[in-house]
Image (cartoon, rainbow, N blue to C red; front, side):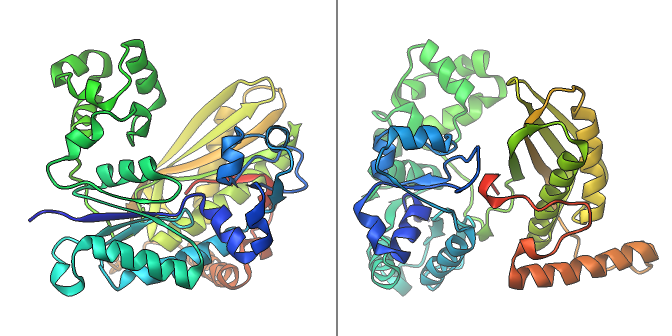
Length: 399
């Protein structure tokens, strides 16, 4: 059976939501970035600001100089998540298989075999766009292809507004003239290496055999060969992208080597990661701590567990161990980043005999109560002692 994958993409999702909330923002370049932070970075920007050279992650001071006259607004992640949830509800009636992020405006919808219920997949694309535009005021791109990779490339091609259909069997022909920069999953080092070989289009990459790609790219040759031919057998996984590592970073307002401050910030990052893990019903077996020094150098160290954990207390010990291994210089720190990976699902099987101590069971009750409070009033309302609240203005989130 031919697969039918719809990809919806709201370009610059945060900007789109802000412009729906305040229509006066539609008439000027818009930058979404924290206000009042000495080292604020760009969270999102409008197409006008992008054309001026503004990019995500760029220092706000530089972005403001590049795009003079732009309006800067504070990120409101809760609002973006709420808008994403409403967008998702509009699509859920067409397929049970929807893969989506938390607040990025991207949805993959598997419509394979649904044409008798809802009509041809292109009709569903038009219908959903009309419903979302009329109901939410945002205008998503939609593209249709036989797999996720080609559908995503199509979205990048028509951004910021449009639609595109790639018929089954025409994937390689569609990709051939396109730039390599449009190919998802291609790493920066691989792109640079291909440019050294004077390969700039996907079609030129597709002309190379697996054995030719093996020499410079090793085990990545299979992915490069399949992607350049428009082949992607990955399934549309229902729900948020569960396999993605949990990644939080904090940029200090001023460089610091205050141990108490750094440890409290790491503790808060751990707390945020642990909440996400429990929400996903996952556990992490490894924590990595990235330390960026003020002189531009950085150090990465990791710590692992035999059995995964989603407890603030267990993960905090792991993170502090990684931090101790990484923090080996007296130079001030500019930022600290925490990544939880090697994720696994929590076992639904209950233990016949209790394997946790009284103290651990008490901690689970405390965390459960804190999660309830945070779900209702926000994460910043309550925290574990010693963990300093991070300023959302200088925290970057990439879940």
